[in-house]
Length: 418
Image 1 (cartoon, rainbow, N blue to C red):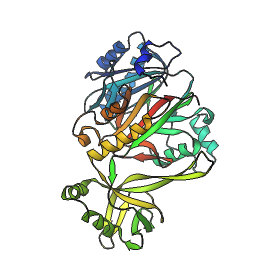
Image 2: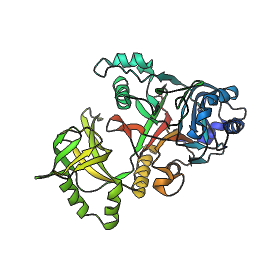
Image 3: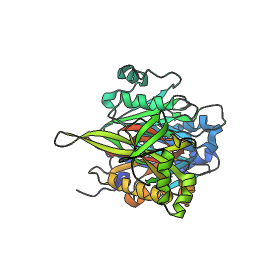
């Protein structure tokens, strides 16, 4: 297969996919807008414009899209404010800008794409027990032309998990990537669509000849054996088993800690999580169903010393497998690299990377700037990247979409007519 470089897009004809990116860290919104407009020059038309802006500009958010749309032309506009901005300069340098004013704009020309955008009022959601058609009518997105979705949610929204479950229900074959926008004190929402600012949620559906693959790096490594849940009340684990041995979750954890070194035991004090196995049935090439599993990492939120029970931030049930996990920088690097390398081994190369990263990642996790984008650039050196730092990341694990924390959720956009 012939090699492909995204740099060729700048020299391509209009019928060829083109991705142009610009990034500014000017302290005023007007200066930042002027920066990105100048970077694009005369090449300013697109099918989809993605805009990510730091909450430092929160009071100016209602002015942002009108200013950009005066100078740049795109059929659809979508974005949000976040606690930091991820973007790529016109020279191809991908950067994570944390705790500083920043504006990232990406203009995507996607021949053969079917793009739908909708703002959703999340105050009253359709019934999850009702028909999927009700959800499809509520979103206004045609499932026959939806292969992937970008989902951005305002931090003031209610029913966030129900919204994510409803979108899974209505569009079971679509991949969803997104996040919760950054909070601020201005009297309006954090989401950008068309030429306005809204609360609730916004969704961009991508279909036709284009799709988006998901890479969800949860930033943890497993420690100790896999346990089975024997007794549980909602989200409180009462008894676990390993083979014929049964014990309370605290007793099981004490056995795990005994096998760790001193440095690892110190990390457990503030970086311990629980992985809950999610299994997905996939149809194999021979027509048989194969079950694959992945661990959904969740916070531990309480311990009852009287009976050794542990509460976890997720509903669980007897029979599920669980495993303790430890969050650390090295594990985050290795996990992300492995997942990105696997995603890069695809006949259709990724042509744009949407990154929704947790506020707890970045410099705070890796001890240096550009932790996640530098990992992606090791695998895909010229991949244009844009996104934001979120208050919760949205991406699939084990065949269902979940709201995560401490996670990097990548959406890799590919031209894949098949």
